[in-house]
Image 1 (cartoon, rainbow, N blue to C red):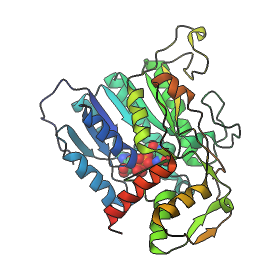
Image 2 (cartoon, rainbow, N blue to C red):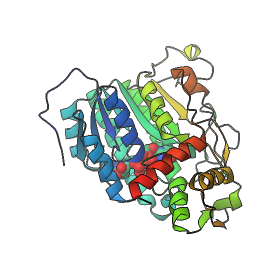
Image 3 (cartoon, protein in one colour):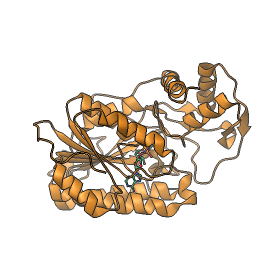
Length: 348
Ligand SMILES: NC(=O)c1ccc[n+]([C@@H]2O[C@H](COP(=O)([O-])OP(=O)(O)OC[C@H]3O[C@@H](n4cnc5c(N)ncnc54)[C@H](O)[C@@H]3O)[C@@H](O)[C@H]2O)c1
């Protein structure tokens, strides 16, 4: 389905966002539309989780006159190219992906198709259109078995533990080569556990709230000895917005790279963590949910899951240096916002 085409061109900056029916893409589109951007969303409405939620997100966006959408897969390179060429974006933000650490054990092929082939198709479109800036989602999962905390972009990240993480690390390498070869300014975000209203049904906060309200037990892995850097979605998309205006520039020599910058010495390319920079104990997160709902959870303590990591924690200094901004929402406030949305949306 394409809901545009002959719309008159405006002077507004044009951003093609993949994954606008998804959690983060939806929030980013709202922010950019509110700021006067023209946004074209591209999403394949994959059935990894409730497709109704995805349609509702797109319906909400379509109320905005400057939003247009194409429903198609990234793997359909012809459709993707036609869409991108007709829209002629100044900027591409690529968020569509097969996400989820745990599902990558069940269906690894979906990750190769969406994340490796799909991302290559996006890169090809960006190269041919010579966009000002290509920004793409990677993940804190690429830090894999690293145990030097907080995770910094300057450290090696070569120990991915799942195919999900491996495809995202592959995306970083692929993007670096295109940035080098075609002088394509490229930023890769490493997102840390994003949560908030309109969130994904496969992620912990959603599953916990849903189960607690229904009186079902919640599964707590590694017997609760888990830590996550929970990042509120509104903060995350604010950081993306600011990074859009900070395209990397190929340095003339290594000496030009400032200390602490992950800028490549041979390409207009950098990797940037987007995280709250706060290591929260999973059990404190659960207690905050219980406090917000006024209901005690039935806790089902479980061993560590295959491919999972006990902790994530972002060093967000580079983000702050580049944009002057760092995410700061306290997880208790973010949980309250999520619960308000969830109860209203599902009338629970
Ligand atoms: N949410 C998080 O905590 C988190 C953490 C790290 C990285 N990320 C990354 O951020 C990005 C956005 O994640 P999200 O949480 O919004 O996930 P999401 O699943 O809600 O959104 C992804 C969207 O991409 C679409 N999509 C998937 N495969 C596609 C394909 N082959 N072709 C076209 N569309 C396709 C889906 O329909 C979905 O709407 C992803 O790249 C994800 O890997 C998310």
